[in-house]
Figure 1 (tube, helix red, strand yellow):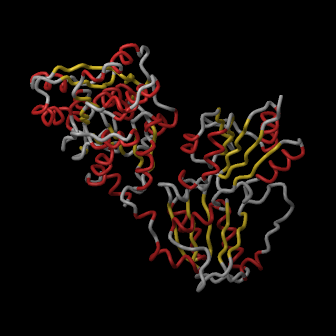
Figure 2: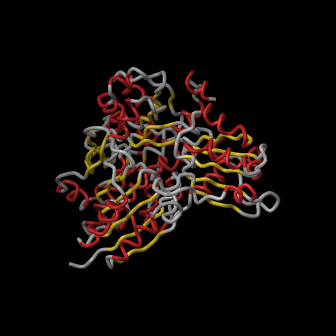
Amino acid sequence: MATGKVYLVGGGPGDPGLISLRGVECLKLADEVLYDGLVNPLLLRHANAYCERTCRTDGPNGRILKQDEINQRLVDSALAGKTVVRLKGGDPFIFGRGSEEAACLRKHGIDYEIVPGITAATAAGEYAGFSLTHRESASMVTFVTGHEAPDKEGSALNYAQLAASPGTLVFYMGLDNLPRISQSLLDNGKRADTPTAVISRATTPQQRTVVAPLNEISDAVINARLQAPSLIIVGDCIAQRDELKWFEDKPLFGQKIGITRPSDQAEPQVQRAFQLGAQPVLMPAIRIEPIDDWSEVDATLRRLNEFDWLVFTSINGVEAFLDRLWETGGDTRQFSGLKIATIGSSTAESLAKYHLRADLVPDKFRAEALAKVMAPHVAGQNVLWARASRGRDVLPQELTKAGATVTELVVYQNLDAESFSEDALTALENSQLDWIGLSSPSIARRMADLLPDSAKAQLGKTLRIASISPVTSAAAKDAGLPINAEATTYTWDGIFEAIQTAPPTEKSADAE
């Protein structure tokens, strides 16, 4: 059996958008991913492999693995012929023990590649609003471990040299040792009024930054109850923060929003949440699956010339129908006599990758509006609707009243999710979610079934629900879910806009 290969990949500091393109490529190649506790689990969306988390302590998120055990796991998996990604927070070689893992792999003759990552220090400073180096305030930067090996005799750190440094000091993993670190710098001559920042959970929507003079920073951090992982940054560059702060000013900064779309289709919503400063929590309420029997679809594809209109009411319908057309040997030349109508702009835009354009798109993205704009054009004509296995029947009813002959063709299955992931359940049960977005009636009904009682008790208080449309709102209310915000544009972007304009709850107002 051929020996596999190990990729030591830096996953970046927390924001999943900060991993490198090469890192994403490696995740897609992997048969196995061993990721550490500082890695954002959203990065695992790029992998189709077996993934296991290494933790510092045993708990619900994984079993503790000592470094020797991790090294041996990498060796054993590679010797078994697997492609392995060791995914590490930040950069593998900046206080990440990646060099120890590389040395072990070389000792055993295993091929490996090191993929650098953005280290936490540079990202934390930039997301907090200051540059670690600046021509007027800092011509050098020093990275320091704030947590030396416990078996080391004495400290290797020379605080006299550190205190005399004219540049910026960055201490990694030093939150618990902050009083000792700050006092050691003061004892060795560092100015008491030196600007100091402690940044917790940098580059994530949970980022918190405390700024104080060096002699006051310990008390300030205790009062703010900051949590690890945190970095300590000491230097005059911190004075830039008032002018350059940007990340913490995003409109939905710190909000946790449940994304209820199927996980493999939620990438645009995940990215939009991060753009707005929110933390997306994947909690799909439905799943999209291919149909079991394509015989009816295939037969219909062979007689497209019999139809005058083709109607799509979802992106899933577009992709299922047109992909099947291609798989069965057809192509868009068969659309020469067809006009196309879509329920909304997103569905219309999904036609572009097939080099097709919609002839009709209503201003309001709902079945009633689509039927209204189509009605004057379909009398005496044959309409083909590529639909899901379940959904509302408004469209065929209204088009039939307008004189059309409507053929309904199921091209994909819309099925209920069986349960939430452990991460989503933990967020719900611990009141860590601020919003849940509902983007269809079927999602609303399933959400009502899946929500634990503890989360239902918080609805309208610490947990609120945003709906994509009046139809979805009605389904949610029928299922016992209160709606706190409703989109005026019936898209996920509309959901995010509704959340932004919703009045704050007492919890969010207090947080300000």
